[in-house]
Length: 339
Image (cartoon, rainbow, N blue to C red; front, side, top):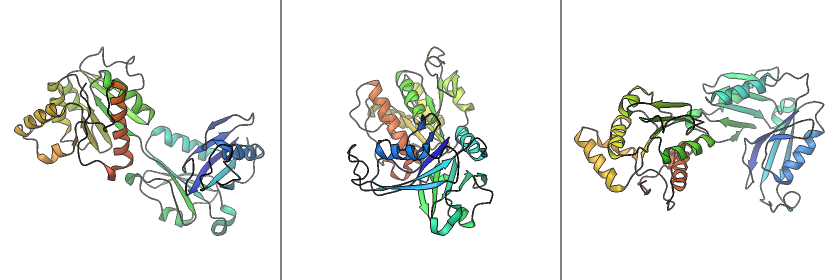
């Protein structure tokens, strides 16, 4: 088996750093490096390394040599790590990597890629947890001091980067999405959000709408009076909350409880008139302007949504933007048609 990973890109490329692919003895694969002839060439080289050996770096310039047949003359450059794994090799690093990703707490893989600076250690990998502690290494020696010095905290949600000849490939922590309301929109949002790596929780007061058949991928399905259930749910600064209940009163009671929390994102569906009325009620009940100002309402990017599925897409798009690009969050409410 051979582990391959895209560790650096420059310019325009069909895939970004962090993509990975396992190549097996029978020629099958899991994952992708972006498809096309570059992936095919990496796979061809990987199949020649099945017997093991040191990791190596492959660099591809996306010009007439690569991509012509696929129309992928991007002009950029891609650097791949090819790491053979023979049956006798120690695979604890890869098991630790797998376990860290499965736990969803986030981790960063650091790879030495500067052949001049790191000489015989090029291709070594070091896995750090969210606190910056070393979880595992592929070599016998600890990481050079410079590796830890340039490690960026996962709390700032960094993208892959290269610093001083080291490729840093962060796997960001999964965020919880709390969906209040198990109706049609909530169900569609849950399915899409699961696909883009949110841990989904659903709250509804009706068991026929909040069950395993409707929400098969939800981490938790919480059935009971909405206000009572929300009072017991842990909401932290990595929690995203959306309110998509069946009625004005349920929306208002949910927002009254969620707006004052530490939630990273609070959004509510509805017409502009409904939202104005709810906000006015909550002001009278003592919620501050600061609390209300952080509520995204109506939730969902303006893509001309008409159907339930389109509304769900617009909502999940905003959730992704809030998770991945927090500095670029919109400052004005967009309009999502009420359902």
